[in-house]
Structures are given as C-alpha cells and as structure tokens.
Amino acid sequence: MDDVTSKGFLVTGTDTGVGKTVVTAGLAGVFCRHGLDAVAIKPVQSGARLEDGELVPEDALFYRLATGLTYPLEQLNLYRFAPAVSPHLAAELSGQKVDPRRVVDFCQQALLRHQVTLIEGAGGLCVPLSGPHFTVADLARDLSLPLIVVARIGLGTINHTVLTVAYARNIGLRVAGIIFNSLRPGEAGPVERDNPGVIAEMTGVPVLGILPYLPGVSVEQGTCEGLVEAVEKHVLWGELLTYLKS
Ligand SMILES: Nc1ncnc2c1ncn2[C@@H]1O[C@H](COP(=O)(O)OP(=O)(O)OP(=O)(O)O)[C@@H](O)[C@H]1O
Ligand SMILES: [Mg+2]
View (cartoon, rainbow, N blue to C red):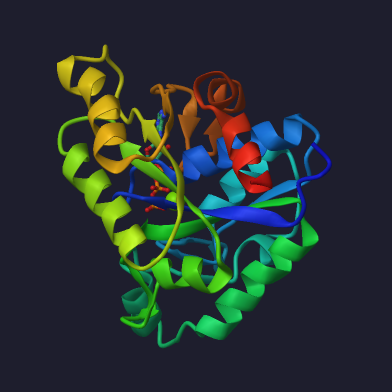
C-alpha cells in the first residue's frame, strides 16, 4: 500500500449530525491500523466547546482518540467557533471571518504531509464555510478531492442522498462512495434494508457499507469503543484505497 501518495477525500454528509465524524475517525483509524500514514482534519468547526476559557474542536479530538495519534490540534483544525450553527454565521456571531484561501492552504498542508488525508466538511455539501461563494462543495472543488458521502440509514435518506450526489456531480465533483450510518439501536426494517440498493441504483455510486449503531461510541463523551473494528468489518475501506490509486 505504499504507493498511495498524498491524497485524500472530503467527507460530507446528507445533513448535520449524520455521523461524519464517527465515520471519518473510524476510517482514519483503519488506515492507520493497516500501516498508512493517515490523518483526519476538520478545517472549520462550529459548536466548539468552551473549556477552561479555550474553545475545544470536538471532532478533531475524536479523530485523535480513534487513531491514537497525537498531532497538535492546530494541525487538525484551523477555525473553531462556539455557536452551533453554519460556519459562516458562527464566524459572524463570533466577530470573525473565515478566509477561504487559508482553509484551502491548511488542507493542502495536510495533504502534502500525509499519505491519506480525510477532510470533514461541516453539515452538508451546500453549507457555506465562509459565505455563499465558499461552501463545503467549493472546498472539495478547490482541492480536487473526491467525496465520501455519509448518510443516515433510515426514512428520508433516499431524497437527501440522491440530491447530495446530484449536486456534487452538477458542479463536477466525483463521489467515491456512500457510507450508511445507523444512528439508533434496533433491527433493520424494510426501509433500512431497501435504502442502500435503491440509492446505489439511482446514483450509480457504490455503497461502501452500513455502519451499525455502536453503543460505546460518542463524539461528545469522547468514547470510541469498537469503532475502528466496526469500520474495518462493515465498510469496504480497501475500495477507497483502490479509488485513490485509480
Ligand atoms: N454508528 C453510531 N453509533 C452510535 N452513535 C453514533 C454513531 N454514529 C454517530 N453517532 C453519534 O451521533 C452523533 C452525531 O454523529 P457525528 O458527530 O459523527 O455527526 P456529524 O455528521 O459529524 O455532525 P456535525 O455536522 O455536527 O459535524 C454523535 O453524538 C455521535 O456520537
Ligand atoms: Mg462532525
């Protein structure tokens, strides 16, 4: 696998809270476990926690936990804002501005430093990072990175996922795969069983797996019990490495 060089993916979701951080951290953990120099970064974090007077970028902390790597948080996160709203508004409410050039440079540094870089967006693909002219999709385009789309497995996901893929294609982005995530415990019903197949058919994008609900995993509480093993088992992570080489 040592011919994978300085490449990566932008991990987006069909919505906020669908499991981008969990999937990103799990994938980075699996890549590291298989001997790759992989890293996960979150260039712009809103909803950052205030701890001892400092804003804590929660998603980046969770990547460190899942990978066991201790890169300085400054290498994993560039902007962090307390309001739990879209980054453009979170910045405004904090009296700041997100500079698109700095975000792109920050991501490029990581892409240059590591074999595989996973970049988590914020919310979904159309979310403005800085304003209407610099969205998560624009970041992926500026970096020429393919997308990984994280989608919830239950009711409502057909529309959200197909629209996300259609928007991505419309502006020339490639979609490497869709990963479904189970946000709640319980058996799969007819909806959960049907969704992956129909979405694969409607989009032509490979479904890379369905991550089950993991009771020992919580981004907020900083627990990732069984996450890397579950991603290793339920997600076709090797397909992503093959995609990078293609
Ligand atoms: N497979 C899972 N099993 C158990 N809990 C999960 C799973 N996936 C996600 N969660 C929980 O669901 C919540 C949302 O997940 P996560 O933070 O990964 O979403 P996100 O898409 O990154 O959100 P944001 O848009 O805020 O970055 C978190 O509390 C997380 O711990
Ligand atoms: Mg997140």
